[in-house]
Image (cartoon, rainbow, N blue to C red; front, side, top):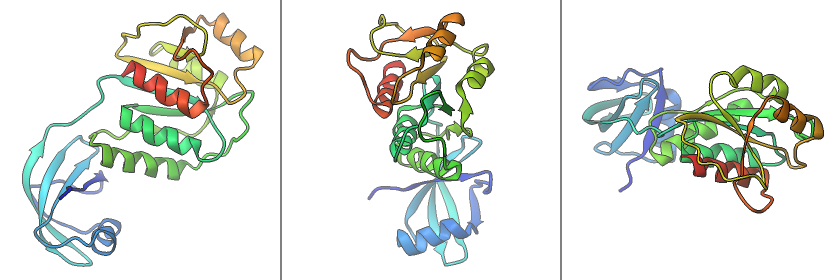
Length: 227
């Protein structure tokens, strides 16, 4: 039987023996997953603590958990910041989910000259990232910020690590940095002003395909190539 993982943030102290009183979590255990006493669960928190517990007692209002073992944190091999121009429909959610599974550490949604959709459900984004982390087995939860304009975002980060502009038709680059940024353009491509901005500030370009990729595809492919 598959053992479910749950992120508890900093709201629960993962002791060896404790009573859990989280209303939302207990509702999920009782009403959705139909857990029974004697089943096992994995809990992990913001401190990168991850432990396997046995459910000793379970009711609608509380659960008695007894630790079985503690796991080593499972973390991405690199610290990747994904900058992407907001897309239409549910494609932003696909990026958040799949890039979390691949190991992205930080998500920075961008507003560019050709961005069409500019609204972003921040709370929904955090929920998707947490659920993806729970399911894929990583112990760290990626950080996501509110959308920011391209020309404001890049100066804020570019002195901290190299940022690669992911585009078709450039030389293949072997990315060796342990901390880096990936920049994915909008559905209509970069504007002339943005391309001039990249050139004036000497941003490196990274070719990820011989073909034109959709924004969500480019985000996933670029992430998989550097991690």
